Structure formats: C-alpha cells, structure tokens
Image (cartoon, rainbow, N blue to C red; front, side, top):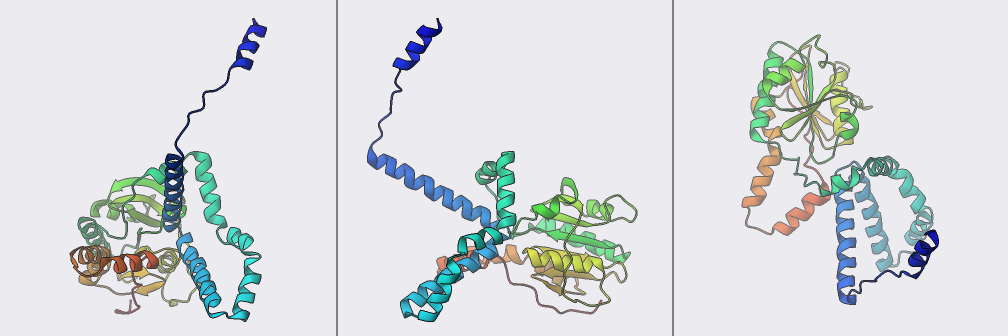
Length: 302
C-alpha cells in the first residue's frame, strides 16, 4: 500500500499554468507599486515620516551635488552612505520593531487593507463637544488633558492607558476628568469622533515652558513634539485653557480661538476643495509637510 502510494507520488508532476509574459509583467509591476504605496502610507502614519523626509532631503542634496560636481560634498556623502544601511536600521529601529510585531500578530496586512481617513480634520460636532467640556471644566477648575490625534498615530501612547472606544461627548469627558475617578489622572486620546483611550501617559517635554506650568502642560507639549497632535490642557490652578501644537504652547484661549485651532484642518480641507487654482502643487506641499503649521506662542498668561 505504501509502495503504491510512493509510486503514484513519484510519477505525479504538477501542472504548470502558463501565463503570458506581458500579463506577468503587469502583475509584477502592480504588486510592487501597491507594496511601495502601502509601505509609504504606513510610514506616513508613524513618527518615521519626518525621518523619511530627512532621508529624502539628503538624497536630493546628493543628486544636486552630483550635477554641480561638488567633489568635497560628494566625498563626504559617499563616506556617509557606506554606513547608510546600518544608520537607517538604527534610526527606524522603533518603527521596524513595531512593524515586525504587527506582522507577527497578523495586524500588519489588516492595517494595510484598512481604508484610513485623514485624521487631520476634526468633525465640527466633535469639536463642539470638546469645547463645551473644556469650558465646563475650566469654570470649576478641573484639570484635564485632551490629545486629538491627527496624521501621526499615537498607538504607543494609547497602549499606556485604558481603552474606551466611545463617541466624544462633553458629559463623558467631564466624567472622565472628575477628581478621584479612576481615569482622571492622565490624558484622553481622541481619534476622529471617538475617545480611543483614557488615563494615557505622555512624554514630558525637556524644553523649559515656564516654572508656573505643571505636568499636564509639559505632557501636552511633549506629545505635540513627537507627533502632529493637538493637546488641550485645562489648568487645575487657574482654569485657563491652553493648546499645544508642534512643540509650542498657546495659553489662555477663549472659545473662538479654540474653535479656530480645532477646526483649522476642516476649514483647510474645504478651502482646497473649493479652490479652482492648481491643486496638484497644494497636494504635494501638504503631503510633504505631513501636518499643519504649528500654533505660535501667545495669548493671555495663565
């Protein structure tokens, strides 16, 4: 019996499906194009996007130096490129490690297939609920820290907190930051129109922002330094509302100023949609910048 089965398997040859060479070439090009696009999309959704832009800038400088025949610059860059691969592995080590972990958990391909929306624009009703909650907490001097995720994912910081996954409402935000409640100590991360997590731990900025400011303000600035997120702080001492963006803190904001900052992404999206001028340059510039302009420091003192 076993001998007969072995003879059958030995004599069996798989049927090879012949594919036209032009069709194979098209499939090959499409597969590589989709893979490159998805990898670029994944890079842009992490903090590696800024590092990637730096690498592209260096390559453009190298091309310009080659055109101008700048011998010294070319020599320095060639010496640098000799260890470039190792340098890239070191620079992108956190992102590569995270990608391998997601691949091992089966989440990498699902993240590729997911049709993610542009988080840079905050829905108007969500902004209204956030403003309503912030003003209510400011009136009774309840400390709060609300981080609004935009293009750069905050998954690493989200994992330090408690998952919530609830629709943003002023009542829920007020209850979360109520003193002595389990989730009041930490930050709330908002993604789109939902509260992703609460009691999250954020990195503190190492830049001096004022001795009168506490841990919440330093965490807000720290979160805005490592991502393009907006971090809103309600001071427990004075009730003043501040927003950190791009490593800068704008303090003592009123309702209209807060609304202008929160809805800037939505207004910019509508402006580009209605503009009749050359959109390709605007789109390229927006993709290259990867985020909106940082809010300058200013406003009333806390």
